[in-house]
Structure formats: structure tokens, C-alpha cells
Length: 168
Image (cartoon, rainbow, N blue to C red):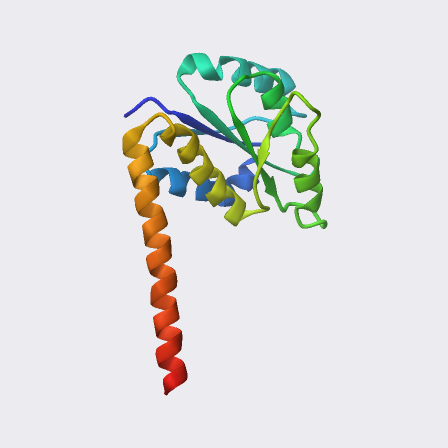
């Protein structure tokens, strides 16, 4: 097994269904990753230690998913120089808006890239992590270019199908 380049962390195992989408995206690009649980509130020392040691373990990007107060991505970003991508989890009656605002409102100097709420955001987090790695890895960059072609082809196919349906 390859050394993980990306860490997918979440505040609770209840976030796994959504965060698996990031893993699926990384699988598509052949990028090794690890998945773990750590909490900014319930295990702050563990979270800080995890973030501080991430780079020395060979990680290049951290994807952090959290719901509610959603401080996980920010706490991790405070303890590492690696890029951190925050995924808001829709775990409360506010349907993830609370998480989105908590993740996106970082103070100057502690950046967290923030994606959409839920599964689409987790997918995009995986793709964004691949783009960060692809900036220095030609094989990943090629897979990303192929992915864009596949997306465009899918739109063309849907357009042709719609036109054929409307003619009938």
C-alpha cells in the first residue's frame, strides 16, 4: 500500500457516508489516502497532535469534514502548514449552513479552503486535493485533464439525448 498523500478526517463516524465521496474522488485519480476520526471539541489534544505530525508522515493535503460548530478544519489548519479543505456536514436542523459559516469564516492567516455542503462538497474536496497534488505530479494532472474531458463528454451526450427526445 502506498503512503497516504491525503488525510480525510471527520469529527464523528456519522460523517462517514458523506466523507466517503472524497475517498471515491481520490480513488478515481489513484491517490492514496487515510481516513480517521478526531474531534476539535471532544479530543482537542489528539486533533492538534494529528495536525502537527501530518506533514512529517508524508501527507500533502488534509480534508476535514464536520457538522454543527464545525471547528475541525480550522483547528487543524491552526496546527499545520499543509493545505486544509473543509467540508460542511449537514448534521443539524440548519442543514449545514452553520457548518458552512463556521468553516468559511476563518481569521486572516489561517486559511481553510471551503467546499459545498454535503456529498457534492466532499466530492469536490477530493478533486481539489487531487488538483493540489497534480500541480507537482504529471500523472495526476493527466488524470484530472481526462476527468474534465469525461465531464464535457457527458454534457454533450445529455444534450444530444434531449434534442432527440424533443424531436419525437
